[in-house]
Length: 153
Image (tube, rainbow, N blue to C red):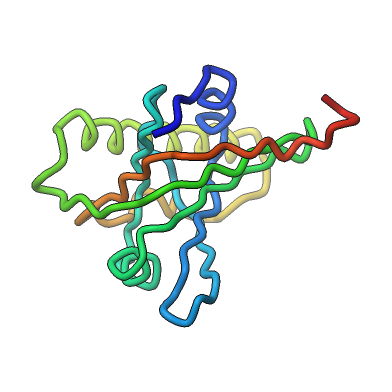
């Protein structure tokens, strides 16, 4: 497993979502948006997957996974590569479930504040209707790719 530094952890924690890529049985790439529940220096990342669809099926057959996020304003980003496994809700440490609940509460709060400021967004609060997770994805990072162009660093 690859150790993550504070800069990478802080970068991913600032993102509202990340793009998760998995491989299907024909070798095709599947991308989906997922939220990070928890990320730590040991290279473990807990990802929220609420819809039990292609990402789940792909990981059951092939654990290879990548996680990508970019910040257009700072012109920076990272791609983390590794292996993913499914952790059923009843097997999760209670601190992970609590972290998910705090993340949802924070997202709802930010949306309400932005709506009060008059910023256009979704007319409802989609986070409030998200189902409780039946499982999470535990990703163990084994490679980090800095996407920031070399001449900008």
